[in-house]
Image (cartoon, rainbow, N blue to C red; front, top):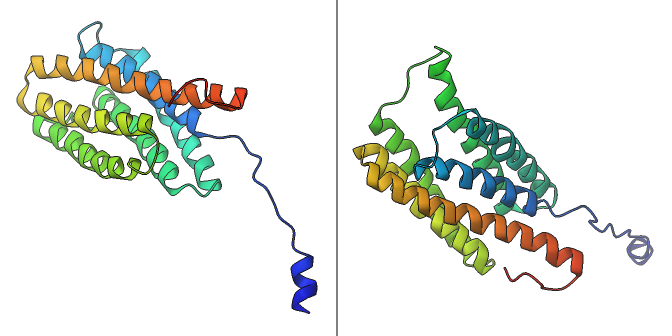
Amino acid sequence: MSELAASDETIIRDTSANPAPLGLCAFGLTTVLLNFHNAGFYPLDAMILAMGIFYGGLAQVLAGMMEWRKGNTFGTTAFTSYGFFWLSLAGILLIPALNLGTAPGSIAMAAYLAIWGLFTAVLFIGTLKLTRGLQVVFLTLTVLFFLLAIANGTGNVIVLRIAGYEGIICGAVAAYVGLGQILNELYGRTIWPI
C-alpha cells in the first residue's frame, strides 16, 4: 500500500514571483527620499509621508506576506517589520498633527530608533548567510538607526546630516540589490552583481 501511495504523490512547484525586489525597492527608494531630508536637501513634507505609508509601508508589508507564502522566515520578518516601521514613523508624525496624541520627546525618539537599530543588528547577523549586497544593506541600516538615535537624542544637526548621507547610501544599495535581482532573473544569468 505504501508503494502505491508513494507513486501517487503530486509535486507542486512554486512558480510565484520573487517578492524580494519589491520589498527592497520599496525600502530603498523610501529610505533615499527620507534621507535627502535628513541630509538637509528639503523639508519633511507630504511626499515623504506618502512614500512612507504607501511604498515603504504597504508595499513592504505585502512583500513580507508574499515571502511568508514562499516559506522565507527572514524575508517575512524583515519586509513586514520594516513596512510597519514606515507606517509607525508616519503615525508618529501624523498623530500629533491631527491632535490625536502628543509628539514624542527627543529621548523617546532616540529609544524608538535605537530599538530598531538593535533589531536590525540581529538581522544583519542573519545576512551573513545571504548575499554580500544584503549584508551591506543591513550593516548600513544598523549604522543609520544608531546615528539617527544619537542625532535625535542629542539634537546634534551634524550627526543628523551624516546620518542622512549614510541613509542615502543604505537606500541606494537596497534599490541596487532589488533591481539586480530583477535583471538577473530576467536575463537568466548574473548581469548585475549583488
